[in-house]
Image 1 (cartoon, helix red, strand yellow):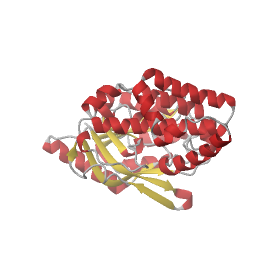
Image 2 (cartoon, one colour; image 1 turned 180 degrees about the horizontal axis):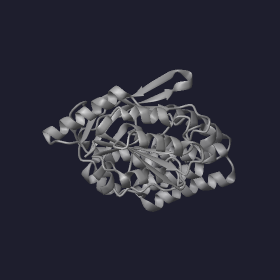
Image 3 (cartoon, one colour; image 1 turned 30 degrees about the horizontal axis):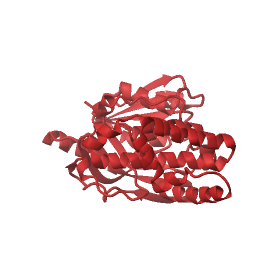
Image 4 (cartoon, helix red, strand yellow; image 1 turned 45 degrees about the vertical axis):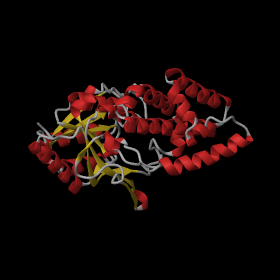
Length: 341
């Protein structure tokens, strides 16, 4: 069995997909790379086919009609044969030395017969065009290099979240969670970093700078103007995250994880509400109220927690001059804390 299946969803990725794939090939026979061509009309198909021909025992190519990033991830998970599963966006890449160390740790776990359901590594905000990097670590959250559980979850700083780029799930854990990302929807990586977590029993944190998260493309989904245009998709994902788990059951089983999940939902609600308030028209305020009403309807306890959480609670305030001033302050604070663009 392959140690890790890497799924690389590609849509018109000709400019950068080779950098991504080359960084994964360092894993050699221990990895499976599934390139999902999501209806591209540039040279993505040609490039993917060339890689498959060169590395037939490592690379599998799937060509499909366009369904969006989530559809590409779903396709990869359905076809994965590796013990672990990781999504690598086609404009991102992995550190080659760190990848080899991750594979070594997986082999060590197999020998000891004590395997993690989730491997957590650092990721890097890579502003490649500006030659700037910021490493996001978790040494304060989990003890490095040993198996632990959600009971060991430490204090997370305000900017720390377990995002998709930092996570390597066991494939059978993802399948057990019944995750199925919506098609033609952006920001679904937030679901990937949320819904499967209660199905994880033990975690291995490796203090390795593994994932390079490329920041700086004008058409990138986290670009501010792009997020304003796609706020409805942000709302859609926020609703899915708020409703996909039985939080009362999580609270009883893993209280520390429950606190983290509520915090993650609060972040999503904050970002959705802030962008709606930035648009500032009556329709946007109606959508903001509808989002809060949705949460109240599915989980009143969650609604109360979010109302009295600092940032998400502030976004519930009424419009007007004072509301506009607060909106700007909340936006700048949220942008600094959550680093969403």
